[in-house]
Length: 80
Image (cartoon, rainbow, N blue to C red; front, top):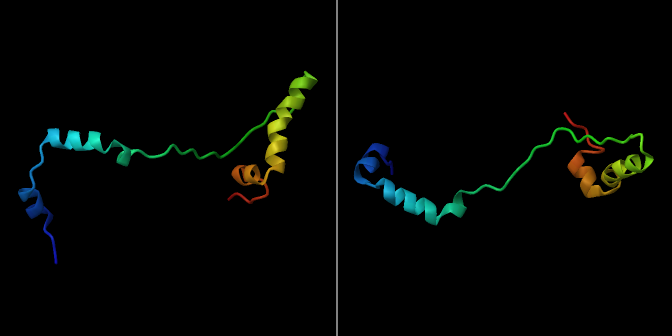
């Protein structure tokens, strides 16, 4: 069975108000979850203040030791 798009367009009439109403009622169908692609994660690990330097290394240590963070950060993975 073949459907001719031009025939369908000629038979179906939807006005702008109907489209807006449908869209408003189904807004969640059109939402896309936020996504982020990160190419680099930089950590400053040295500072003149030893306290700041120690605190700045904390996220890096976590990334190196937690398997989930390792996977997220690509640690131990070859990146092409």
